[in-house]
Length: 334
Image (cartoon, rainbow, N blue to C red; front, side, top):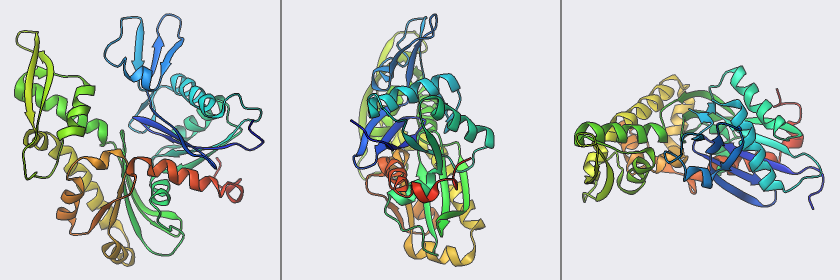
């Protein structure tokens, strides 16, 4: 069915894996969660099925996220997960596919090698790496080959990557381990401290998506959630307001603002003037937290735009970069 040279672009995210196939567009979007039987070490479920098991498994089954803060924390499980997704995308391939994977901008050689090895073991014929902010910029439709500065803030699940890109490469970049997951953790902590109720990470994520905000809303929204009352140990339903969410999320949001600020401080003046003309582009699922663009704009005094289809930007950019694979051959490979 598939001829020689099946090319796949993978956004290997801490929270979600998105795969792009040349000529077909995005063909897979699944949570990066794997459920494993501890006794036999067999993979029981991957992706959506495994996510449903998070925090709900018996002793012998563990549902884990094999990537933490944008890098591989469990090599064997990542390899199994990649194998599953590659097979799902390609079917039983006659020829191993060429794969391009995004990585955060500030990763060590060891972490880069781990990604390459995991993808090779999972069945890739050749593995290429691309930095997340560059992939995000391409996916957002920015022409990065021109000699002018573009600023990208890519907020994923595990990392926030900030980069100033010119002439196809990043001039100044920073990678911060504060992103979607840290927002969820901040919500869990806040509700435990203020309401004395323990909630799981899935409930925290629902709160973030539905009523989370980092900038004052015109109308306060509310949402009922259930958790465990830490005094009685019994289930309890409480109502949470978006004003409380703002209180919970301001600290991690300000860390992202500070990181963007420090990147601008280190950027050559010519490029800074380009950025103040064009504004800052935000991509990644984490940038969809209500009001984050307004907060950045207010603190930095620069126009901030959320890219179209922000969640898929990195995968789309990786896909577009696949078209230039033949010219990259040998260049971008470790």
